[in-house]
Length: 274
Image (tube, rainbow, N blue to C red; front, side):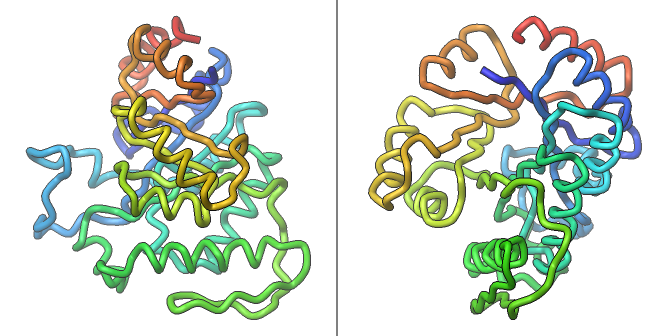
């Protein structure tokens, strides 16, 4: 089972270049970075786990810029967003960013996509909250049209593109995983247009993975093509053995949003699971 990591990189933490080098040297598989463009100070949306919003949410680095830095100093480390808030992006610009990053890193990129939880943040981008899932689906379709080998059109309610010349192309078709809580709606979206699921926290997989597989196969998708990647996991040997028993091939461990010493200590602790 491949083991990756995720972290809230900020202007106060270890840098992406130092972290990426340390991860690759220790044999970790991947680095996923989250996204928040801004956090409106009104703070009307409650923090989903409860309590005060952690400081790092207000200071996150742009994930695509940080991942480009990580790509530049590594050769094997896989890179991804965990998660990118696609409803908040112009899909034509994002298609170019993702294609460029994947081209330059040799096909090591995974697009972790999400719908978000902060209404005020989304509103700043003009997102209609109740329709954000539909907007994300249209925007992913536009991106894939631009990544297609030949000029390809897509017309949707929330995003469209005419047949266009768009280069570079990604080195590979980037794997797209949706993050979010288990449920029929999420599973239907995964089966419709994604490549798999990023279950945040990784709990409840014994019950939920068979449900997702049924929805996936009912949609006519190849059972072998489904990716389930437990995300932001705090590890212990029993938990990781459980994931292996479920057939999980990749798990992403949560690193603290700290400085060099704290993060490297945690990496050394996690390395015993490799």
